[in-house]
Length: 190
Image (tube, rainbow, N blue to C red; front, side, top):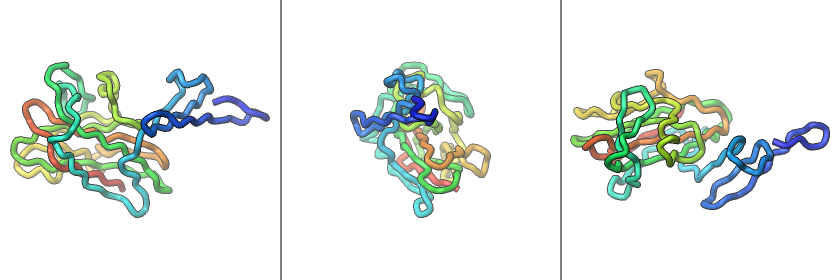
């Protein structure tokens, strides 16, 4: 952020490719040290929209997620072997109060997946970015699990993600091992 007349901070905003909005908060031209990129928002929560169900459509899901090596509660570590399908949902707290995000999948026999939260405005693309989750992987605890272990990260169990007003996050659901990607992802705020 550059200082304008009287020491007032000036925020430089630039529209970039792919509908992303770049913020150059330190006035350095966007070298990444003070910049934040926000991609297209999939879900904007507010006073009206407090819950969504997203079909993951596993057959068309991107499959450049790397095979996971995980421990429940830790950020993903990758073996770099088999590509895995995933869905990343960019969300924003568009309301007037802070909220806490809960997310869970609905699984059927054969589904095996993990869920992570990222505090950012775009899905993580690199191995390093994917390792830097805010709240680590969940393999279980979905209220819609049925007989199959299914990932869920719920505010009621202390695994929700707090979001300030205007803040962005990514909910990441990825197939694990030989399992398939669950067909439904539920996200809600409280």
